[in-house]
Image (tube, rainbow, N blue to C red; front, top):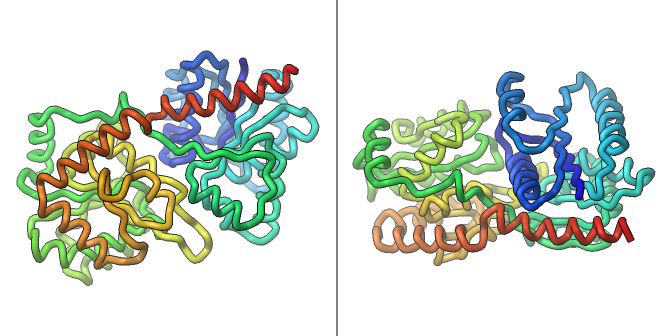
Length: 386
């Protein structure tokens, strides 16, 4: 059967929506689907994109950047319409706000069953007419898949009249994110000059939503009890300057390290050498939210417990008190206390890390999640045939 996956982003550049699109496409291919992807691929050079695309076992139709929104819309509409006519998919997957708009418009004419994937922020961001268009588009979908109960509840509170919806949490790649031998971890720590340090790690673009400032504000209390603690931040450093100024004002600038964008191979090393993974995302004033937390599962596969903020999709990536700890949003004090709880108890930290890894391997890999997508896609494709 043929599946056309239309996404707003795709690797090799970073981004949770892109990671989701890539992994589901790859796993569906492994399950026997003939997959074609249509997507932009931002935050990477043309050479990186071409090399990445050549290595994939499925086809990728790269969407060029456009100079204006109008040009982008007509270009994407034409490209997608041509792809549907040429490829004749049995079912379409659409991910990303404007992508869902586009697929909703096109499928009104071509009548291919399709799934709209809801991540979270697309239901709260934007001007009123954009939110109205998002609601209209999701209500046209044959099926809606939300990446968390948190995301689904946002839609329900806004009275979306969906045909049918389900929750399939995001996952992580158990082949890429693995526990490394202790000797390799020691060697990497030595290279960093942090062999004896406690290491906190966050992964994600350095933006206001990700809440890195909460951890930085928690550091003075953490350092009072554990003076050799360092906070490492991996991701595009969009707001590095403001966070650096905050760290300087708090006197912790020597303990905060911005790693920038790093490859997955290097990220695995950082995840293995850290003691605690921390992700304290917030709801921003303009409506940006954390729909889930793929990086939390990647850390779990490396045997690391996570501290995450509540009232977000992150809370569904852990079992509070068993694979990690959930703290209130915007609460540096509670965040500091959770960090101290784990840094101060090696047995508890190891226990939660082991339990996080066990749960991730048996429940939270992309292979597990693709099986759920596969069942829905085959159901929809069969309904088209009948």
